[in-house]
Image 1 (cartoon, protein in one colour):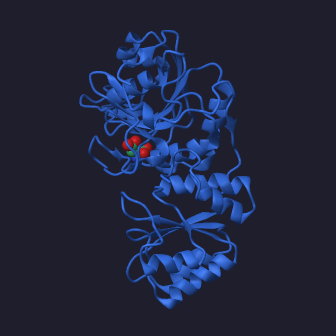
Image 2 (tube, protein in one colour):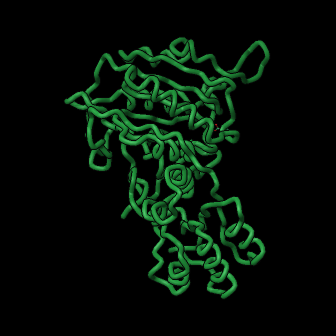
Image 3 (cartoon, rainbow, N blue to C red):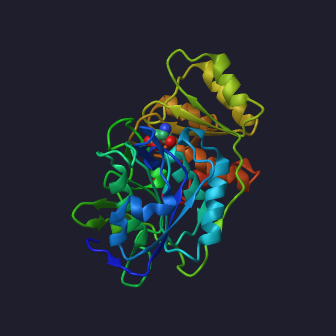
Length: 350
Ligand code: ASP
């Protein structure tokens, strides 16, 4: 869709959690300090040109997103649930480092979303001259407020908006630590691109089953998940410690290429052992793009036969959030495995 139909009465809640975007030069101390979002219109006057009501909510304390914990996701979900009827869309300002984890987790924690939840941030603080923060913020607000001719949100999804590209949150990864194009969504096309106007890729945007039903806000997460990244030279001790540890219910195995891992007997033995202990072992590729397919190579087939579940083209960030969410819903490993292989929120291509 090329032209969005703006509803002049849209109300947006801007939620500020921390990160680089919220910094501004304080000339009195010649240093960066967190920006006061209660005066958002004074600080980013461009937002005043929209005829929206923009309220803000600031987390206390503000955090660098490297300190994000699932407790922040619970707080965000609780806040969105409490204010859901009051606003047409939500914009979450968040540090870029763990933004893809947070956006992924929220996409699973909110089921049946009918309004946009847009994460954004920036590589340069909003108060410095070449900041990317203003543009990211302004585009995010416009997208969060955009409605179609029926008055429904154009993008009722959890997304990341960065450098003029709107990505599904559970498909994006941070891929660059200093370029303005910090995020990519290699396995899913952009949901929108901001140029002279915002072009919505409506065919790729998910719609809720019902516009009239309030979403379900899931707040039970089980974080007993770890990640094993395969690499040449990995030892049986390390693999056993991670796969068979008492404190894990699931392990994401980051494999090579199309889902391949060593075919050595000791490795497959440990995988079988972990699987027989009821652990969920999820195969996700280390490649930035493409999918796991355990039927192509003998090395992938061995994993499948040993009880490993396919993560298809999931990002690791998304797999982690999905496992936290599903393990919080069910004690049955077989049910969790089957949901892991199902597309719940557009997170995998099947
Ligand atoms: N370390 C910062 C954070 O993630 C980086 C950023 O915001 O870009 O909070």
